[in-house]
Image 1: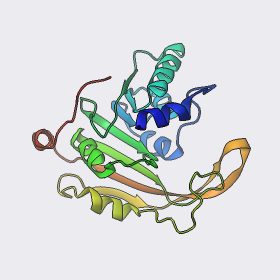
Image 2: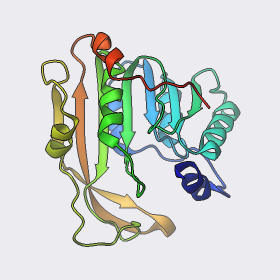
Image 3: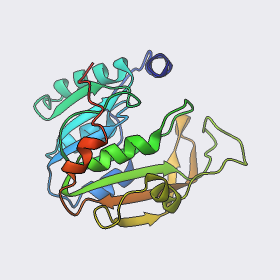
Image 4: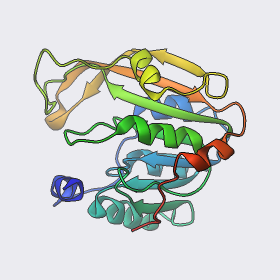
Length: 220
């Protein structure tokens, strides 16, 4: 169901790549390039930005159309050696490997998904010193799918509590709600709120990860 939903979303997509999310750029810009995982890579703006800045990136999406489009776009830009794409329904499987950065930009869906379990698995996939960057919508833009004014957007602290990670191993290094000017379809602009949570892995947590399921069934 999830693959069908998102394949329809990306059907007829005219272009791939595009702008990187600003909080990804702000966070990754000062870092030494390493291995990155882009959860829900979509059209690949973040994946391509990271690759262009020296990272080796695994872009993951449930949509086969998305991963094929991003893979082809990366190859066309001469970045095939830095970009690998995999199709995963993260409810069932998770990419293998260890990462210096895991980015979950607006990793939200109208479909049922145990997001907290997936993000805990992502934290276990971090190398020592690696960052888990979670950026969620914190407000409704004029072009948002959801226009319900009573929508509750979990705060960064609420998201951290839901993940239930041991703060001695995965301390929170940023939890705030910055505002920014966003541009939507047709060039419309609006002030939006982002809920930002950054968690660092301060020591090797891989032995723990074995019990929690890498979920990995391999790329599909």
